[in-house]
Length: 510
Image (cartoon, rainbow, N blue to C red; front, side, top):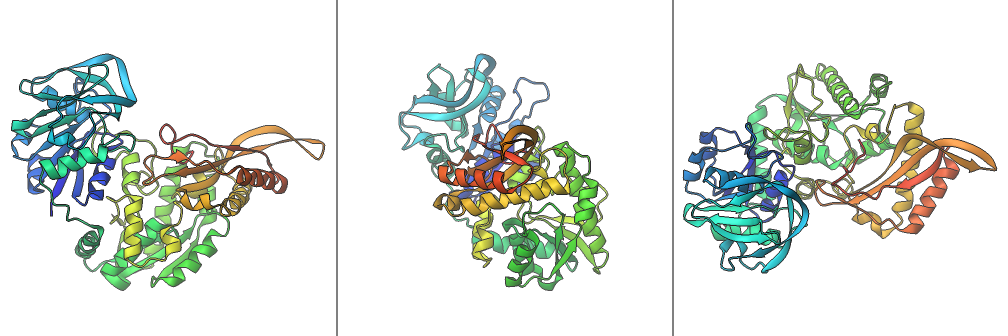
C-alpha cells in the first residue's frame, strides 16, 4: 500500500490535504514537522508533503525540516509555508510583502509541460493565504507559475524531486486543485491508488484487538454517527468486552434521550443509561466563558465514566468518537497549530484520568465515518444524522446556562427542525439548529411591550465540517419558524438568521 506522509507545520488546512489524498484512494498520514527522521523513514513514504503554517519562515523558532529529508529519494511537495521553507533551505530569498495575498488569486502557468500541472488550464484561480513570498528562487529552480503581481506561485527542482506551491490545492476554492494533487500522486510519486475504507476497517479492527488485549472497554454513546460507528467497529473487534454507556448530561435536545435509546435497540450493543443532568448543570452554574464550559463538561463527562467504570471489572479503556477536525481545531496536531476551540473529547480530558483513551476514528473525517458506518451496517437514520456537538446545547446556549434557558432553546430548536424538515433543502444540509443569545430586545405582543431574548437560526452545508457555507433556507420555512417561535415560546421575541460561512466563523457559535 502506497503511503504519503504530510509534515504538519501548523496549518488549519493540513487535514484537508490528507482527506483529498484519501479521496484519490492513496493512504496518507499526518505527523508533526519535528518528528524524528527515522520515524519518517520507517513509514516508507511514496512521497512527502510539507504543509502550510501560520508562522513566517524568517521567524527564529519557525518549523523546519532537516536537509536529510531531501535525500530520501522520494518526491517532496511544499505547500504555502512548505514551499517557502524549501526555497529558504536551498538558498532562495524570502521577504515580507508590502501587500498580502489572502483568498482567490489568479495565476498563470509558465511551463505548460510540467508534470505537476498536466491537464490544468494556462490560467486559473487558486486560494492563497500568505504574507511572505519568494523574492528569489533557489539556484536550479524552474518557475512553473506566478500571480498577476509577479509573485512565484509554483516552482520545481526536478532533478532533486522537489516541487512547491504557494497556494492551497486542497481547498475547494482552488480550480484544478484535485488535478494538481492527482498529478503529484500518480505522475510524480507513482502511486497506484489501491487504498479504501474497507481495508481501513480490517486494519483498525486488528489494531483495536492488539491495543486492548483482554481489557474491557467503555464507550460513551451519544446517538450520533461518530460514537455509534466507533462502538460498532470496536464491538466487531472485541465483542462483549465493550460496555456502552449513554449519559444524559442535561444538555440534550427535545426527547433526545428517549430517541437515542430507541435507536440503539436496533444494534447488538450493551447500553447502560445514566442520568447525570443535575451534576452537569450544577457544575456549569454561573459559567459564561465557552472554553471553560467545554472543559467543565469534558471533566464531568470523564468523572461520570470513571464512576461507572468502577462497577465494571477490568475496565481500562474509554472509547471516544474523536475525529480529525476535533483534533486539529483543538491544536493537537504538531507544534505551531492554532487552537480554535477545545473539544470535550480532546481538550477537556483531565490529566489524572484513570481510563486510557481509545480513538479508532481519530484520523478520519465525518464523510469517511459515514461511509464506514454504512459498511458496518449502522442504520441509515444514524449514519445520516446531523452532527451534534459533544458539549450539546451548552455551546448553543450562549451566556449563563440555566434549566429555563435550556428549555427555551429546546423548544425553539424543535420548531425549527420540524418546519425545516418539511423542505427538500433540509436533506442537503450539514447542520441546522438554533442558538439562544444572551441579549434582550424590545418587542410588542398583544399591544404590550416585551423585553425578551433572541434566537438565531443556523444552517450550513459542508462535506467535512472544516469549511462550510450558509444554507439559503426557503423564505416560507423561515417565516413559519419565526412566527411559531415568537407565538408559542415565552421569553423569545425576535428570530434572526446567521448568514456567515466557515471561515471566517465556526459552525457552532461557541
